[in-house]
Length: 180
Length: 199
Image (cartoon, rainbow over all chains, first blue to last red; front, side, top):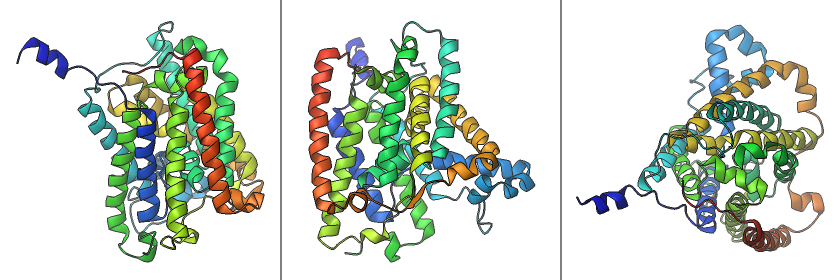
């Protein structure tokens, strides 16, 4: 293989047109409704993971807590044998396939030029924690509420979606150093 | 046609897990295609530099919404069998605000952080750990906030029911609003654009 071919092969392909990706995503969501009668999700799988872990460490604590107990109530099967858990395993797989096909699998840290790696990772952890709390309070995240409920015109999902954009735009200015 | 298939008992729980995995693959694939494994691209939405988040989200919503609408109008899909998350308007709105703040600080939402982590982004991996920690915190404080969590219940309710508008008219209105939104997004990108096209 010549070096030029090599270069082309390792070239990271540009992202797709947003409307095209959106139509693809919309059809996946539609397919989920058609086959299963439910939409997509993400944060729910991590709730199951947390509840299962707590149950393994202190079963008494998990069973008496109303939040955890909901995820481990069915004792006839493992709580990890759950629709959203398998769906999220698929998300990891699909993301990997797409990334690999476009030569985008690369160990890196996404951040703006004016912030240190350490600060970026601290922000990532804090942001993730805040997201986890918000998603549970809202009974779903951008997938389980905004996309899924948005498509069936669910009242709570639309209120949630407006609030997400509102909250993000409200504080974006104060965190611009991280991204700009 | 008996749609949704699962609700009509076309297959059982074990097969549904296989379906979940396959649907998840499609979901993750298109998230990554759109560039949502990249926190800079996601965050750029909130600085009006790259409106991809808005465009992808609303294209996906109207695509699925139109599909569901026509399938139900044709009588092929029974909308009453579709799962509708019950609305608790105040905690959901507050939860949305909190989630939006977490989005800007961390750069991802739960689904996109999975795609980010699996394509090698360290910040995405740390973010995922953050989500798990956040859910743990939520679980631990749940007894203190369960009253608020269950406040302002409105039941399973859709916008057509709330606004007393027929379903089809609202679908049309949402499509029109989305198209208007896309036009504004394109205009904003021309003015302030700094699009992130590549990783």
